[in-house]
Image 1: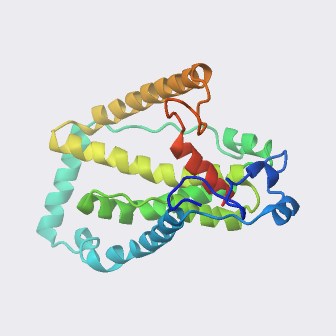
Image 2: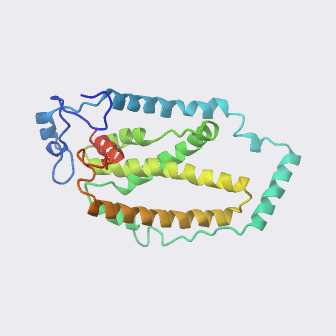
Image 3: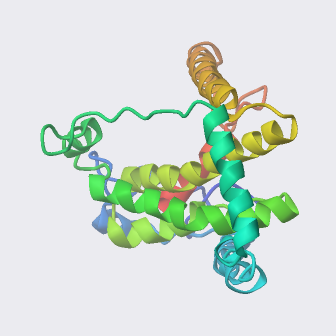
Length: 262
């Protein structure tokens, strides 16, 4: 077994055959797993998981100690400073047209489309799990944002979300991947959008045009990426295989797949 690899291995040193431990409905085959082999990871893969657990736990400490005097600062300002901040805030609100959010029908009138879709695929994720995934991002977005603002390094939530969903919805790899995606990507995109707003603030770009630039860019980039991906899968031979002659092996996708088995 290699020291560093994106694959998982069985007890013979061969690449782990996922089809032997997964049922046709994409759920864990416990009997097949007991008859096949435990999962073995390269040392680099295992170390990355250990360091991820360490960092995601330690990241709470700066929030509770290093910045404990910074967070309550707006609430402890004297009257003169508070008045200045309020006047400035009102001026900004008056200058920039607020972005009004349009809310659809309530859940009581008609179930949300995501809830209806999730109810049709039992091997997937439930709506309450989606809420938990989003809450994890909300809890960690402030401490991770503070660390990233100082160090320019982002701590991921991919490993901790795998652990949580493994206890919440055991034996469902598809649900695990969906949960991890919402739990991690929500935080990562929030950091990216915040960084854009910070750059726009330095460049004196009003927040409202910046917001719409982000929305338009997201739609264009997502559409183009989906089109390019569809073209690649249709025109590149042996894509996402280890024998692809031009090294289109999809390493990040392989890591994602291996994590779903773990």
